[in-house]
Length: 67
Image (cartoon, rainbow, N blue to C red; front, top):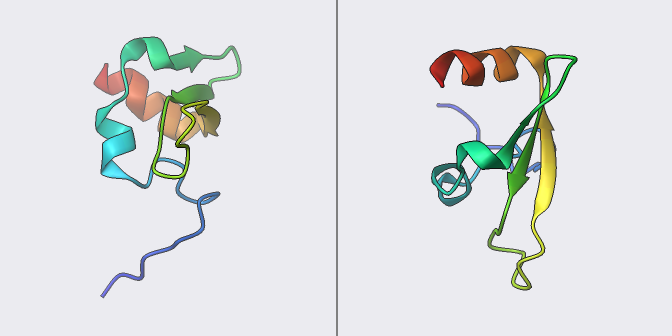
């Protein structure tokens, strides 16, 4: 059985609600191959400030291929 991590640093898009709320406009494609992703709101962000997380070159490539 796979263990679930509660460490938000290792799984910045861990909540399905965060993932399905993304739009292409929320993704910043960076020159180094990484991507910045704007998480507009999450369960712990009741004020709605949002946060930016960065994903690796590998993950960025997969997202780019999918788009």
